[in-house]
Length: 343
Image (cartoon, rainbow, N blue to C red; front, top):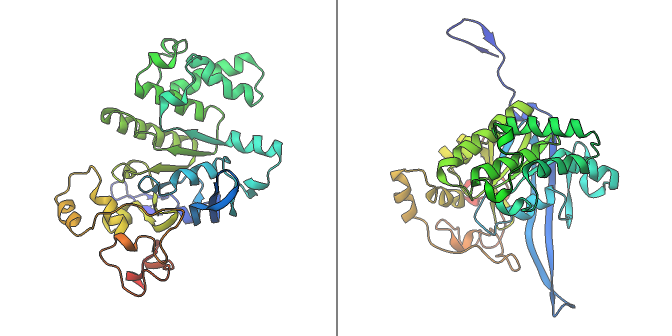
């Protein structure tokens, strides 16, 4: 509880993430894709996700950030039930999603919304907006036509596609990019999910509408008490729409913390490198960039031994970083980093 200095009253503060119920739990998740030579012989594995662990609490938004090829999309598809874990587990509402029967899978998919990166590619071009939004309700077994129409109109108002009559009969190509993404969000929301996966939902949009879409998602999250995984490569947007940040590199999580901890006090050299590439105007970025060597993400077929960032790291400890993968250290409460600099 906190004291309001203006009114002199005691107000109940919002619960911290750790005080809320865990909605989704990911435990030592591995997603490996087998490679075959000429279609037959085994030729190794692509280790897209290689030992990821974290929890998402009720009404919490977490951001998973990292450059292309770090494993974010494979992690997202595993959460959506599109990739089966090689090992480890994903637990939603106390149920392991890899062990669900057909009826339970239907229940799970109706409770997990998905906002795609490319709104135009995500919308069927031969359906109008009304049909696009009705389709999930039909699949979910909502047989009453009037109920479907009412829910379509309600969710369109909620995502600011109004007046509704102006959009119901339009096809995707008749909408702007921002309007298309609002339809995608409406479709994700229409089954009243408890969990949402947003896969770089603003990366394909004009800069002028990015903040609007992020604020819309934030308003929906707060109104509906949604738990959200926000996938992005851009640390400049996470402060609009996240409570915690998980930084991913080459299939591993290298740093975890609150938004303020990660943005104000990044610990891992890779996180610092990501911050130099943000679009936030900051003179410090130019100075920091000079300290960071260039390089490319490692192969996920044959990742480096030890810390996977060590070939690109200016602070590598010889004889240690290239030999042994670091455990998670916690230099400050709630801020974990997998880096030998903090042993």
